[in-house]
Length: 83
Image (cartoon, rainbow, N blue to C red; front, side, top):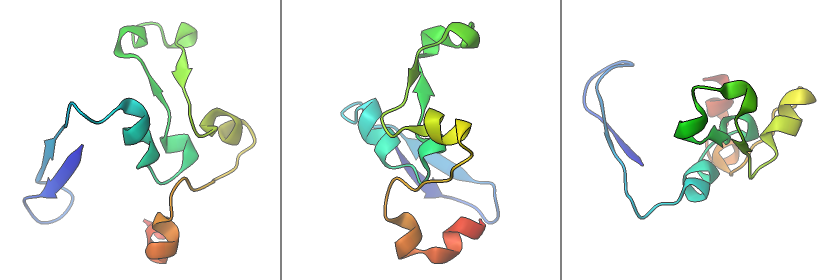
């Protein structure tokens, strides 16, 4: 997925999804492990029984109340953690 800012503030974004990007590749772009989890769309109606796709250990981090980064985004932009 790519995002493009089209207006000022927190509004005005356009999104483009690339069918060639896998879910795992998309999740690897996230900043924190707890943001790098997903469920299949077909499981959305029954979240208690949903199988969580969690390639970066976000569920364990959530249970342990740990914020762990997945990429080097915070090293590249330290102020990012404040946003």
